[in-house]
Image (cartoon, rainbow, N blue to C red; front, side, top):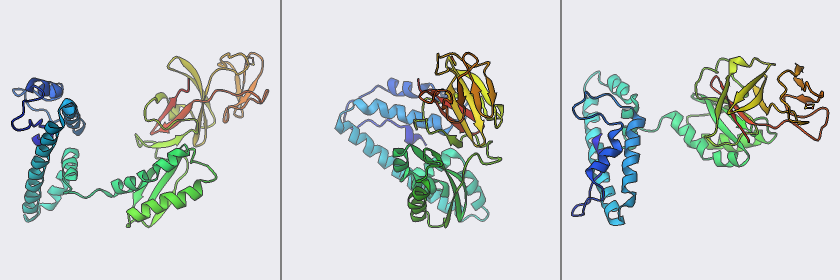
Amino acid sequence: MNSLIETPTPQGAEAPVSSTSAEAAVSSTTPAASAPEEPRDLAAMLSDIDRLAELAEGWSDEQRIAAEARVRAVDALNAEALRRMIRALREVPGMAPALKQAAADEVVYAVLRRHGILKPSLHERVEAALDSIRPMLASHGGDVEVVNIEPPVVEVRFLGACDGCPASALTFYSGVKKAIKENVPEIEEIKQVKGLAAGKGDAKDTVYFTSPFASYEKEGWTLAAQLRDVPDGFTKIVEVEGQSILLSRFGDRVTCFANACAHMGMTMDSGEIADGIITCPYHGFQYALESGECLTAPEVQLQPHGVRVIGDRIEVQLTA
Ligand code: FES
């Protein structure tokens, strides 16, 4: 869709950026005219559009308004052409499966969605419903994710502070259920799933667990270990960004603490671990690896770091 990456120049106005600048904005990802064309993915093409939009930031209001009007006009033309083409193809016997297959392509889907030709998928509508209550959950340090959708049932999981929170049942029924049912009428039942669902660890980007110590920033997460490398009931000491940390697995949960004894800051690499308790090899301070609590001197504790299980990866968010 060339129209999506055009930089229209207002009629009668001097071009605010040179064509060289516009070309440069896309040159790193757009194949040269003489080179054989490689298929480009949606992200690369959207990135071109963003960069071209940035070029227009210095334009005057008049120039920007004129440029936006031209983009809207070209969009309307493209949308009408697509509608007519799809309508005509639908008339052709046996064409429906091919159209459906074409719409599964990420670029085709994005463009048809942009023009309102395709309706949002069930998953998009459920996510949009959840987005409406995410600010409320985030204000309590939590989040919610979709685990599975099989109409009329949706399975969701609370993350972070919402998971196991005594108020979560209330939050669940008054917030999540209401939002989904109001916006996605074909969903009749919303189930809450807990913990790391068996067999679901392969889903690459699904967050299965987030510790209450994690902030809900998207950035700042670092791979610390593979989930399979920390079997249930075991602790693994790893180094992340120059810091030694203790990763411990308790069933569905993973905890992460600085590997630094609260007594004198020594690392506890050779400390004995038994029944979820680590004993510092230096002076014998003991810590519960599930909570970081010091059993020897309750006024101190291990320093917690944010940790989450996403797909089969354990990622950490170091607090300092
Ligand atoms: S440094 Fe750990 S008990 Fe003293």
